[in-house]
Image (cartoon, rainbow, N blue to C red; front, side, top):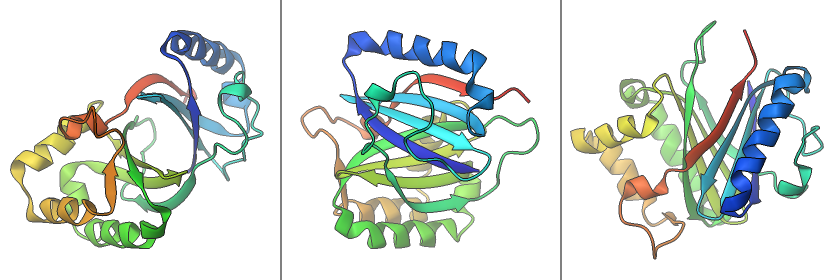
Length: 204
């Protein structure tokens, strides 16, 4: 499965229209749209994060869409790290959690190496992570994790509380490399998690 992430910006009063437009589109065209398997929209501060999963190579930004103006052609984020721990089995539904931060593209090799080291252990399996993808665009960092549970942040929070030394280590090492998106409003790690606005998955 290939994944594409696009970044847009939208006013809060546009969210319902955007969600309804994609719902109508996907009800009639989504399953036939360039191998699209799943579409998700997340909101975070002023950002609108558009995630598409495909059964083959992810097409570029010219994918037919009801709201091309929300996601300009230069809004496609770059995937710089992927770990496929245990892909979805037939009929299984995975749920994404999206963490948003800021990151200088110059530190991508260091961030990738830290996650490669962590994902080579059994920690992500114990945590419940099924897939991890890291994207960046214009200094914004997107950390996608797929879980079998609907509330992925609960699993992340549990990892904090259990204080597995591997989890504590990577959080400490990421601290100088990845910063919070909006320091003025940040209060806890929960403030880094985007809100799911919409989800569609092709019928089995």
